[in-house]
Length: 282
Ligand SMILES: [Zn+2]
Image (cartoon, rainbow, N blue to C red; front, side, top):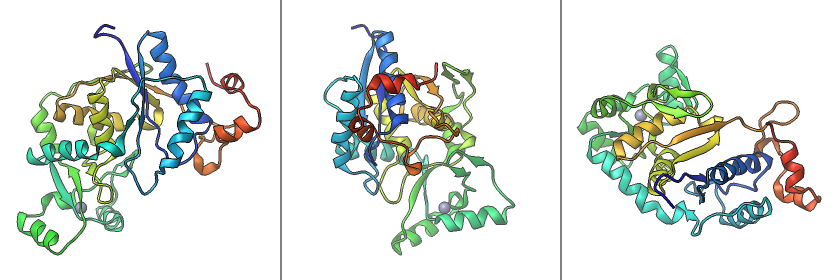
């Protein structure tokens, strides 16, 4: 194996059973590794303990094997490495790149309304920066009073620190100018789980040496933030392959909330992986 070998991964969250859309996404990453004689890894992104259930993890492994995928062991289970993400957050905080945000969702929306609106990113309206300007005394006072807080990225300071922000490359859409302002001062450490999807995913992709990130279009915008985090954490920026999300006959995106059919139930009905592949675009 050479250093230039590609490494891809599929990184599902065990919030429920996999559905057809996941099968398509997993196969894209697996297939890319196969085509390039690279390596394929599996990662279980279960840091959101409010929504994830370890029982689903076993079902995910079974479903992926049924699809004909195989991967390197051990599988990285994010919930077993929370201290890694805490360490990464601490390093950002010590560099003065994070600030505590005490706002509730309601307060943020009210603030935006008062300001006459805010640009909208993939994660909702861009945070107006209310808590960025709190004094050290105000922060200490709130913390002493036991107020919950998230840690947000101070984007302006981060960009200052980075200097020239590199572009990133998407296989479908070509070179992309990195535009982290689309997400603004994103939450890097959530109040409830002590980390965030963004921090954990960037950390792990770096740790695992992922060279090619194959994932759905729904994360296209988040990539701008991920490039910033890679710069701040001293990690390389992989290539990105954002693929279209599989939709149902009405063009509706497949998701658990619209009860798209799970792989488990399809298997029980006698559907084969080959049947599924016939429905995939291209
Ligand atoms: Zn705030």
